[in-house]
Length: 92
Image (cartoon, rainbow, N blue to C red):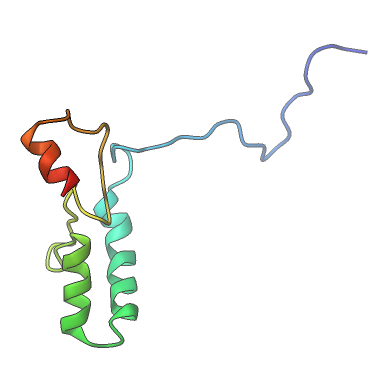
């Protein structure tokens, strides 16, 4: 008997890559159409409601770009320092 692990089988996952900062996969191009379709579905065919839902979520419907501080993207590597003006905005 051998103590070494068996060789990987064909099709075995050898690694997982997370692209949390959008370096490899363009967030806006990937998720923009999905968010647009979800807002259209939730808006039940009402273009004004669809636009409002995207706006509330932080996505510009005309460009497909989502604000970094929005509900739909929410990139926050760390919380702001207590007492800072940014902390006051973040907590409100």
